[in-house]
Image (tube, rainbow, N blue to C red; front, side, top):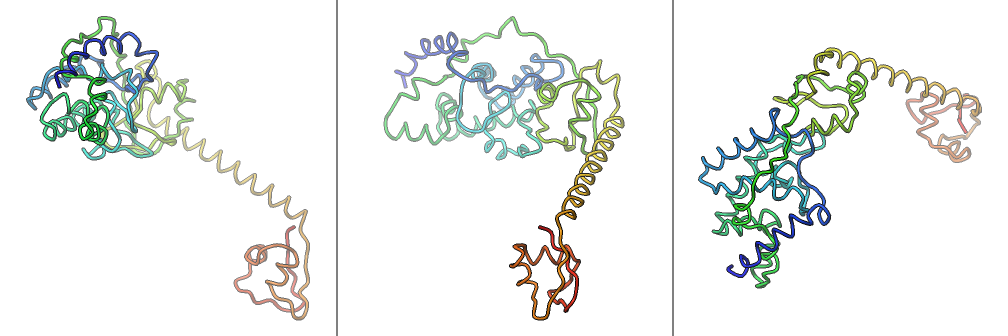
Length: 309
């Protein structure tokens, strides 16, 4: 363990200098912070660490890993793995991702770090497990390979970090709460905000249409929220859904007309069966029944059957 600390300063300095070129960002996208910015996030994290009797240096972990490429399906300001998020009660599925709720993500990440500390007995090892996964750490410990430990962040590294003075406060957002699905197209149509910009501000919502989740609303800049109401979003969504249904019905009718132009009328002969007629005309029995509204395979001589080519 001592050897690791001899290299830590050199490694962290290298990461800071070349991080933006060597690694892809995994931090939360713009808009995922609290409404009044990073200050409130830091205060909440500090209080959580204090109440859990955890090292204060851990508050700098989100900043330290913001430019690191990490394994697994990670998201949120703590780059929390999806499986860990679910283990600690967060909702992560095709419609919502609560890793972008900074409060829940912070609590889950600190619980995960606590679990690893209890397992390994050292905060540096807990950090290695969090950053690289327990499986990778266990393999290194069993093999005696110290490469991983030499190239991971330590508690001392986090203690040397200072908050950037160049960070700008996040824009205050206004929240509209909704209780039924809203089309993303309706949002972009009414607000002029692009789908990409909206998703950056509302990363918890992952599907289109946007599905309600208790306790969460849609965040907009105040100048946008002052000009729209949730009822307007409902109304536009309903109109767009109706328009799509009408267009689909129109296409179905056009397809039906086109099929009629390529249909024939077959007169059933003595000894004919549906399967034989279907095979002869290279269609399915189920299609013949559907086209002619037949409830069974029974047909009679001189019966007229419509068959589409």
